[in-house]
Length: 177
Image (tube, rainbow, N blue to C red; front, side):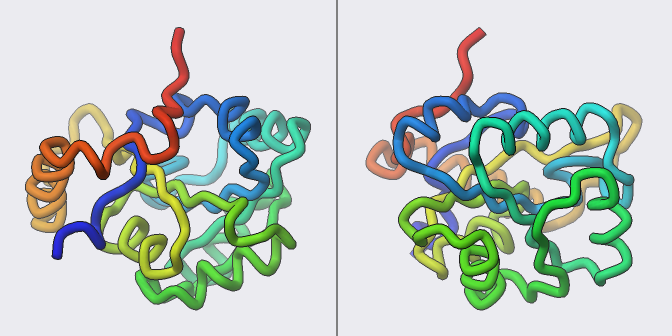
């Protein structure tokens, strides 16, 4: 039952992924959640994120933002990145994920999803038969409240860590220093 919430991999941030390894594994499309995955909730893109997407595009990756946010929020974030996007995605419904894959023009087997929420991002990727990478959610240092869903996610991740067959299904794509 819980396996529909299990990510293929878990990393501390989008910057902790070895994208060269993902490329070598044959992945060509990256689907990113925005809020608390790439930037703190509601923030615009910044220089670090802009350079990050530029690097991914130079490597040859196609990227797409997949967000439950409205169009104006996603467009504001995407201003400097200029990547594909799907807004009002209704995650965890697989329709938004399928649309993202179609927009990128890659085979479904060559796309991977990166997001910070198990209940929406990861479950949606699993519903769409896409591999997923859970990233630890971005949190401000003084932020104390994390919400009830995060406690559920802690429990799910505790069970995931104890079920070895569900871990490192992409081959441990964590970037080594």
